[in-house]
Length: 317
Image (tube, rainbow, N blue to C red):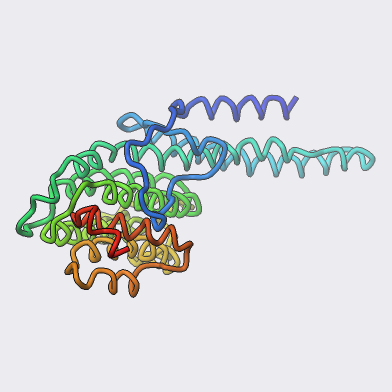
């Protein structure tokens, strides 16, 4: 009876999540170096749209599932202690505990996908901008501010509500997925002028700084408060111990984000380099350890973004 009710409750909690929608991508990766991003699992081909404020519900489901998974384990131990020795080995509630853990894992995917979907319009704005017409570099592009305004409050709220281990998983998955989407958006552009590459490099720096700070965004907000204005976070939540109270992101996370952004930055630098030096710079900076045909395809993409006529590309390839 316990097992049946627990599995039913896990299904009820899963029902609190937004429905999955088929994934439709308007941007196709054109380069083998593109970060794959995304999430893995049975519903990795689905996307989730979280309504305004819906991320709070998803976070509450995570907290509830974690509590239930821990309670199920304790309940299993309690029953084994109370039941006759001959029946103890037959007490196994691993499937019920796994049901709650599966819902938790899906919740993290929902948060990642939900935040990405809120940035979908911003990425479309990047695609629609004529970066080939830029002839000077200004301040950050408008879309950069839109990314900050969307990501910061969402991540801060998630960090406030869920345990640190799940928040770290959320940050890792979102960073990988978002950088991959950003990369594919840029390599999907028609042409980028030299000034356009400089403008995009400025934009990329600002966005990279934001992504690097994701694990400690809420910690930064708290540290700005006066000592008397601090509100103690709920024990066990990410705001208490993700990086030991530090405002510095975990080293492994920083290394991962820098690695993912590097290929994006290198691509833009190659597009903005002098045509006569492009091939040599590509050999020196691009990852040429993959299949030669794939490397040639990557170089062709860079040449296309740079605006090199197709008739001139074979000699450079």
